[in-house]
Image 1: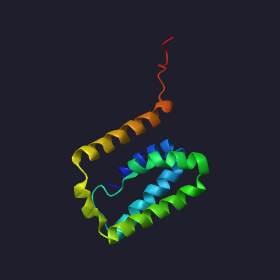
Image 2 (image 1 turned 30 degrees about the horizontal axis):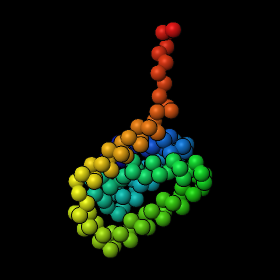
Image 3 (image 1 turned 60 degrees about the vertical axis):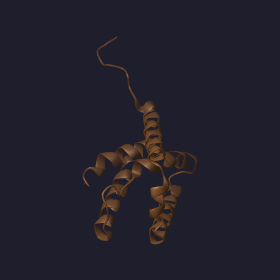
Length: 123
């Protein structure tokens, strides 16, 4: 599972506008942390946060990314301790499907500048 994180971490770090090395360090740190504290399948959810990181890195730089990540982690720990996950049953399936589809569209649109349609050898 940890090896599957490597290409995802590199891709999302490029989307977020940071050096791919940052993504590799982050994925390694997450994998080690989850190995010690335990986890659940699908616990690493980079896709939902990378869309927000694009604007953060662009406007404030890489320095604020670490602070925002730590703050988000503390909020998630607090929500877990308060057992707020039980309220997710009130979110309808259509809302969750819409969220995932919108996320896919945003990631696709972020990748469009990287698309190279030129084919070598064809004039």
